[in-house]
Length: 615
Image (cartoon, rainbow, N blue to C red; front, side, top):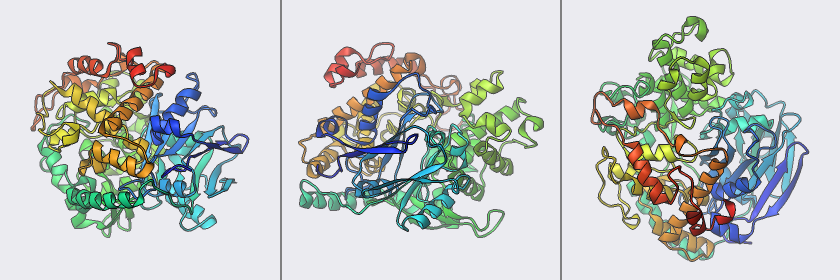
């Protein structure tokens, strides 16, 4: 048995209800890690590009990282991988919580799922017990109810990954939800719809094993030291969650306002911050496995129209999306929308981005009372926003038009509505403005799953964070485009290993650099890594995912930003008048990556990365 990870993969065909355990050899793990890395390798080797995302034979891969479930800080991550029904390209939806640790405790590193169950089903994994159980009685339940019911049927400590009505109805933005009321979402790209297409309601796990390490004593000592400085560097996130920086975000011109049209929102921003949430509705915080930060918010609303709501509080992206993006400064309503999305199983970024798109379509006369089913979609109308979430999850009326995101909705609504979709490759942008942090323009354009900040995270450095062993100490001017290509390349390579290792990227913000990551790999797995091995592996994985997308026709033509980010500058605020020079950055970026001018990895680069046999 290898150190730290289990070395076993569960392959399950839902059509035949047959399953088998496959041993994972050491060599592919050393090259691709686990998580999204080995998942991408498996998908590349077995994919049929002609199969649609919801084809029963299209694979859905749930893979934990090589260090998931260990004692390392935030070793909690799972990747759900496959072809996105929202974008049509590679997707890895990542999530924390405790599910990954339980799968590791059951001595598995992942599941490869194919086929479609004849009737609704859920998978029950408890050490060596593997069962496909009927789930007809769970179909139609929300994700909180589903988790509670499955725990009643299995074990009170069972960890449940499940879909809600949005996934059952194959909404392109459907999420896979974890943790019950302490909600964590594998939200991006619609992997909940892929589960729904397989008639799979949930995957429930419970394990009893513990990992072994190459150097347990040394690892524990390193963990104690790291936890101390991660906690110190993450106090704001512990106290106020991910939304504690909203005031700063507004001041630097990064806040997404009125479907990205406005430049500042000084009066509204203070009403929706993490600090404001802590003063009013927060009752505590919750954390993922082995997490020293604890950014999750527990909330209770005691007064007003949403009185009685108890659950998990909204994160930064959710607050911005249902807040300033829609000109809504009612914090309690945002919390209610977050709870509703969690229960239905909807990605809050795509859901809020699509509602903002619909509000602009209403403003410009493309939607009216008849087409909305009687809803008034004026900016900030919280009642209509909540009703529209119901309609999207259930594909009801206008909700059916919006359920597959803004790109699809614009194709159906026609006219010039594509001009106010804010998406890349079909994935709605998260709420960091590339007109303020220009490195993110390049990051969004080239991210393998579409409009995604998590593949790059370079805006952290533009904010002022330092990584000396990555070579980034003096933060650049956030508004300039020059010199950003190399920075994006380096950050994408560094961030590329986190999903393969199963670590949360917030620890990088807390001060963890590539050398410490290498040290942990050596102590836990017994390898001989240095900082450059971390970056080289990240580069290998980034290129592998690009190769998958190339099979679906992705090239330079797709590495583009929405028109609003290229041609419409913010009219006010600190980023007023600034636009990223994407064309120049892309030219430099392809050269640094060793790709052709069309954005295709060259044979020389693939040989350098050990990927020449995959071309």
